[in-house]
Length: 334
Image (cartoon, rainbow, N blue to C red; front, side, top):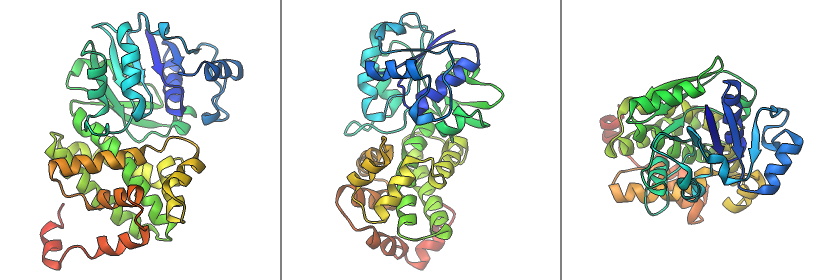
């Protein structure tokens, strides 16, 4: 099957390798001609050091590679998804399945990534989402990994499952694309917050408390927007939250640690040297929570630290003291 992966970052490259291993005709598209040329020459992506790119993997910056593709994977950073979808639109047909693997919420519109792609491509083709606890570095090494293919159209979800599934990359299906995409976006904000806690010197008890209460926030917002509760407790929800909040592979976690140690958000992102999706998601999620009137104190505090210059040292005492005993008893099941 002819497939194209749009975006030559670590995640796009890792997924291109999965598709190559499954015998598909795969092209990895880079927005920058110089990067495409470097990848072709070196046969290695610097973001996946030590992982060779097979000769069977085509690499290009030409948009014409999309012609005739049956499966197109959008692996652009969240802020570039709309432009990437608009670029691809003229080449997509009704039989094309477009898969979003980006994680975020669009600023001001509050749209999920699949909704952005639907708009940008004129609702031409079916759009699915692929998400779960999946560091590109580990997928590139062919370590056992599980993800969820989500689409209201069961046939499209299974089409994506069949394309990616192999002996090291297990794919489940779900109709709840709302819950899967919201989990993907919000967990990056929480990973930043966990990193900040670590940078402040807090340890496992604090991080466990933060992750669990943040999952309650994610679930509240997700159900308000039409997601199902079991999605948030599953692989795409709690599973992705755990891996992103606890691993040094996580750019969000590393950036948060630097912020907790005293660096500004911009300094931290510059030092990480790659896109920190949680930074962008924090503003979008804050807007969305206010719009939907959903109580999300952890995400609100993250927004205040990242965008309003609030001292992280002030945040933990506030969160620890925000509820009275009777309120805690009433809400302990959430």
